[in-house]
Image 1 (spheres, rainbow, N blue to C red):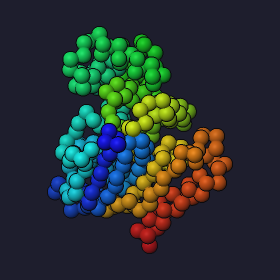
Image 2 (image 1 turned 30 degrees about the horizontal axis):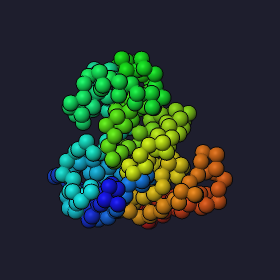
Image 3 (image 1 turned 90 degrees about the horizontal axis):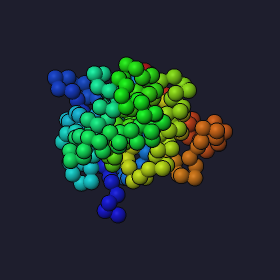
Length: 264
């Protein structure tokens, strides 16, 4: 059991320097390998901030985050991040964006091996070989997001952090990438941890086996649920299954009740 990845968040609070407004307050959470966690909540509640803290891009004001018993004090190659705005360097080709990550993770890998790995990973996310040589401006939004996902997959981090990665895409492309992510998850190493930020309840139900709802600032976890493997919905059943429909209502109710309590 010692090889199972785990993350622990203990007493986590966060306030930006020179700002008295607390963003997150007393977040406590334990996650183990195989958990696909969706973070839900109203815009501005601190979901992305929590993800940045998990990534080591921000440092907690109080409390701590540990991975496999080691405290997180900065960014690391054991955590891959996919942003909503793709995060691709515009002056580099898609392939160069991917091989840059490989250079950081595998400095002894030859350039030919890096190129081959990048092309194979692009194929895994449904892109053709010629995308390797294209600049981001030559790619559609969906293709750019696939490249961003490929860049993370190629370094095979035990933790994958995704910040509304499909939020800016049209409905058809979004559905395709959701299905792609589920297929990659099913066919890959199920000991990975995934944190996926969204404000879409239906997206969370389709993807996750654990869902956390963050309340409004100062934010903490106001609702949490797990979805057993045998109850996981598909795109065809998620609006028909009574269990999922009831869970959907509970999630929406928890978000709306929190909003109502703040404006009352």
